[in-house]
Each structure stands twice: as structure tokens, then as C-alpha cells.
Image (cartoon, rainbow, N blue to C red; front, side, top):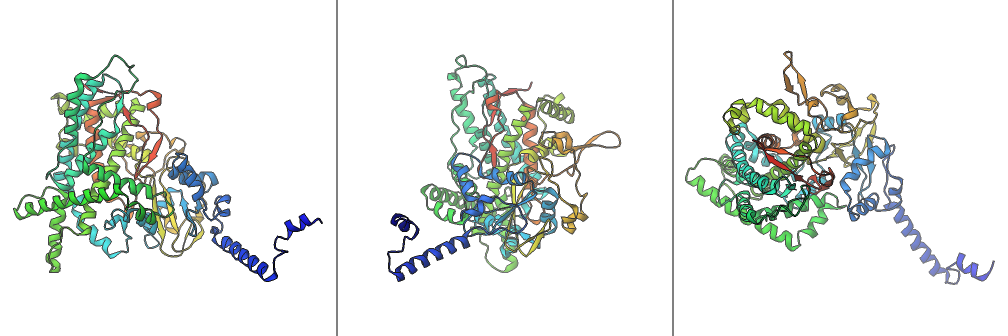
Length: 582
């Protein structure tokens, strides 16, 4: 062997023995530490083989997708199909336990409804939200004593009385501003498509803000924007572009409250795909944009609470979520023998979270809904015909349905359309739980502390279910096998509202909310608190929008159902081509 070869094979041969031993020892320790830090899979559950060869695990692939402009959240839904298994494991951060992805409706339903002692909101989910609204119940484990106190503070907001006397009328009244805006835009655009996202986003914020805070110093951004569009309509150019060319309206600039709200919502959405959400928020909250957003948030809430106290002192009628929460705090303080605190972190974060949840999800659902109606003219026509049959008096009198008519009249096809929008393109696509004890899922041992991701699209929801041996299901899952209906899974990806309808004995069609798999609002004690408000808002807005406007087909480049992930999963493009219904 040549001297050159010896140098290559024995790099430490020329060093003193003690030095060589130290270097070899250090390298051995580093190697063992690296091996120790590599992901440790749970036995028997599929995973990506490349992920266990690096301490980054699957985070390396997820970050690559993010850098290339892809959707990291979509990666999770792809894993069960990739491995042909309803349960897979993934490794999202260095030195962390594997997380599970469980893609099966029955087992997800079982965990959410009947296995609350085994699964709860976990640290990752808490960290996603606690960086922005740490005192809101969404950022708390169910076992946290503060969780119950916070839910007590807001429990009046989903009662039929509040929804039908406060929320509903404000939704209806603010919708009129929106209808006026789009009638103007339909006239000015002259049949050309235009961007709809900002209008819907602003309108739903106008609604939830006045429902949450009352009139106060609130001014409708939609009404102000209508004035701007009207003032510029005379200068609109029509002849220079084809009918498929989007019409560009003046930008609808958000006010300081909506900008602050958007900045904080984006922070929560961004944290969801970070390896360490809590660390992300600690860094992100130091940025000037976030500091400005927090300042605007507290300025708005301080101002509104002050106005609320004046209303309370004057004995004014309770007319907002804030008023109800202040009354609830007053009663709690009296019962506990203490002074009421109306500017507590819980009061502020619950109120701000109510605005956020009621705004973002409704805006996103409406965007997806209008895309479905434009893409499927049959569904749109059937829905409009159903509405006109249900509100025959409004048709004969040449007017819109009133709020009272909308909440009192059953329109099964409208309910079916809304349910199908939420099933196929719901604003939230994944639920999260963490094992609070050692337990099992589909026969696999799951250690305490394991996080479980529950996709609510994909296998068993919008694509055929993956095969599962019945004996592997939990006893409670087996005993509730027929709790919900099923349908032909071969068309589960298609938008078919009729799947939610069934015929009564007299052949009348009725809406069946249990017709098939759907978890858009989760289930159980941690089910979506605002579910009733969301349905009410969608029912009113869809009725009025479809009553007043016909949505024409869009050119292919504007009709994409591609999505982008923020706090919710939104359409990448949301355009409409509308004409006013005569």
C-alpha cells in the first residue's frame, strides 16, 4: 500500500496516540448523538423512509414545498394515499415525537365525540393560537380551568335569542350594502368578470364587527367603497378589452381595524406550518407590523368597551356580543362578590377571537360557494328556482325575502348547497388532537403526548375510504357503525348538493344533515363554537346573493379551484361575472 493510501486510510496515524483517541472519541460521540437525534418511528405505522435519515424528518420536504410556492398543508392529506394506509406517521421537527395523520371519518368522529378522555387539544394547536390570542378558549386545553370560565363568558352568543334578534338582523342589514355595491359593479363591468375576494372579505368583516361590538364608531367599509366605485364609474373604460378580460375596479382599502385583524390572522396561519409555532410567534411578534396590529387591536377594544360601559350605565338595550359579555361578567362578579373587570385578557381575546372566527371562515366559505355556483349552472338554477318557490310572496311583490321570512322558511336545497360547499371546500381542512393517555388507534399503540392530525377531506370524505379491518376499530367506533349515512364514494369528490336530500313519504324533499361523512365544524365539546352563527350567516347571504345575481361561467384561467393556505384554505382566484336578476 502506498504512503498516499496510508494517509487516506489512517488520517490520524501521524498524530500522537492521545490526540487521536480524543478526536476519535469526539467523532464517535457526535455520531452517536446524531443517531440518537434521528426520528424514531412508532412500530407498525407507515412513514416516509427518507424522513428517518435526517434529524429534520419530514420538515425538510415540507419546507422545500413552501419555498417552491406549494401548499405545505396539502402534503398532510397526501400521505395516507401515498402509503395506502388510513394512519401514517410524520416527523415535523427535530428532536420531537412523530405525529399521526388519521384519514378516516368513522375513527375521527369517534375520537371527537366519544374518546374525549383520551384525546384533547394538544400543545401544537395551543401554540398556533396562543401567540396571538393566548386568553381565548381556542388556545386552551379542555382540562384548563380557564376554558370553562371563558366558554361561560360567551355562552349567550349562540343562543337562538341572540342569533335571531341581534346577529341575524345585522347580517341582513349589512348585506344590503353589499347588494347595492354589486348591482353597481354589475352595471359598470358590463358583463366582464371582476375580482370578488376583497368585496366578500370586507362585507363579512363589516357584519361580524357590528354584531360583536355594536354600532359604536363602526362605519361600513362596504358603503364607503360603494361611494368610491360610483364616483369613478364615469371614467370606466369598456371598449378596449374583451368580455373575458377582468374589469379592474378601484382597490378597496381596508381600514386600520381590518388591516390589524388580517395581520394577526396571517400570523396564526403561518405558524401552522412552522416546526416550532411557539418560537415562530415569539420572533414574529417583535416585528413592527405585528406591534402595530396589537396596538390597533387594543385601541379598538378599549374604545368599544368604554362605549359599552356607557350603554350599560344608561340602561340601554343589549345589542351586541360585547353587551352580552359585559352583562355576563357583571353577573359573575356579583355572584363571586368581586368587582367586574370588563377589560380583562379573557374579555378582550374572546371578543377578538369571535370577530376573527366569524369573519375569516364565512368569507372563505362564500368565496368557494360562488365559485361552485359559477362552475355548475345546473346547481345555480336549481337553487334560484328553489328560493323563488319558497318565497312566492316576495316574487309576486317584486321584492327580496325579509329576514323574518328567511329564518322561518325551510329551503332544503339551500341547506344542501351550503352543506356541500362546506364538505367539498370547507375553510378548515384539518382538525388536531393529542393523546392524553397511552391509547390505541386502529390497533396501533399510541403513546401519551402523540399529536394526531385529522384531515376532513380526502379518503372517506371526498375520495373513497381506505380499507380498514372492522376488528381494528375502537369498540365505540364499532358500536356506532351506522351513526351517519353513506353514499356512493365513486363521486365523493364531485359537488352534488342532492346527496344531502331525501324524499319523505309524500315525495317531498327534505334536508338530511346526517346523510354522509362531514366534519367541517368538528364535533364534541371542542366542536366549532360559532357553528350556528356560520350557518345563519351563510343562509342569509346565499339567499340574498343568489336572489339578486346570476353568476355566469368564467374563462378557464379564472375558474381554477386551486387553493392557498392562510388561516383558512381559500381559492387562489375568486372572480365573478354577474348580471342582476330581473
